[in-house]
Length: 294
Image (cartoon, rainbow, N blue to C red; front, side, top):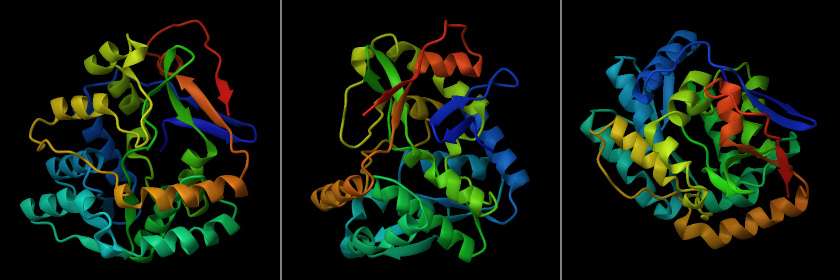
C-alpha cells in the first residue's frame, strides 16, 4: 500500500487520487492501521523513535485494540538517549515491553551501509540504511514493521511550498518490494486519503498561504505537523523531539559527504503542495510542472 506511484529511471513521483472523501486526520490514521492489520502477513511491530509520528501509530493501534510490539533502536554510548527517552516512557505508561535493538552507530556509519550499497540501494542519508537494517531485524524476528515519518519537511522553492522526493526516499519501498512487501516503511504515505487528511487540515491550509513560513532547517523539523498532530491527539504530552544525531552531527555530515561523492547524482524533485493536492483530487489547479533541482 502506497499513496503514490513512482519510477526510478527517470525518477518521477505522482500521487494517486482519493477514492472517497477523506475524514479527519485521526479518523484516517485509525482507518490506515485497520487496513494494515488486515493486510499484514505477520505480527505487527512499530519502530518507535520517541517522536510524535511513531507515538500516533502506537496510540491508534491501542485505540483499535490491535496487537503489536515496539522496537526501539538504541545507539551505543547513549548517543540517542534524549531521542528515545519518550519511547521508553510511553512503553512504561502503556505496559509495553519493548524489543531494544542495540546499534553501534559509529560502526554502522563506517561499515553498516556497505552491504546495502553493494546491493544497489542508493542514498545520501545514513538513516535510510538504518531503516533497511530495521526491516531486516523485524523480518528475522518474524514481524511486519511499521515505520512512521519522512525526514524532508515541507520547504520553500520557487516561491511556493513544496515537498522534496528523491530515490533516497523510495529506497525503503524498493527494498520492501524485493522482500515481498511485508513491511510498511512510510505509514503516513500508505493511502491517498491519509495524505489528503493532512494536506486538507486547517493548519496546513493556513500556513500554506504564506510561503515564507517554510524556512530551511538542518533537521527536517515540521512545526506545522507537530501542531496538527497535537490538535488531533491532545492526550499526547508536549515535548521537544530530538532526531538522534545531535551528538553525531559532524560525524554524520562527513560520512554523508562521502556518500555523495560515491553517488554524485541522485536527482531530487520538488512537488508543489498545490500539485499534490491536485493529483489527490482535493483541488483543480492548472498543471504545475515538477522541477528537478540539484
